Length: 167
Image 1 (spheres, one colour):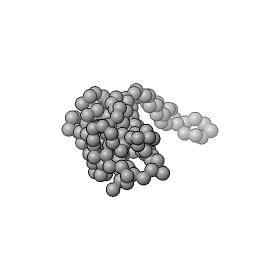
Image 2 (cartoon, helix red, strand yellow):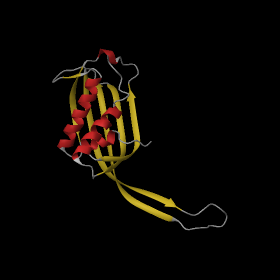
Image 3 (tube, one colour):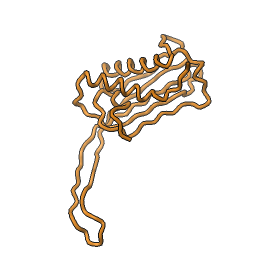
């Protein structure tokens, strides 16, 4: 799946392509009874400033769905974990599949920086998972701070697009 930006932009770099995007919610849970949320464990992005930007972008998305952030006991607890890893991408071009091998192969290998984010929303009292959003994709480190801010906001909007409305 390829999109302009998704949760991976939340990691603080421009998102070149999204490999994975998964959103799941507890089907038996009535989200209309949830009105407040509090933050639990979070972090792991490329630095504390990016962690704060991710948190703010998620706050905006939850607010648009009628949830109010509180300190202390709440209906829901929100957590996120972001990570950045290195992977190799190998692509081979050329040749054909006839009986006689015609043409040569061209192999291109590149090192990728791949980011991932997992956002979990738990029912506060039972600690039961209510919703999970996951994104993974290639990151580019050349995003300006303004571009990073925009992509964080767009990524959060896309990740939370299927968050169950509680209104």
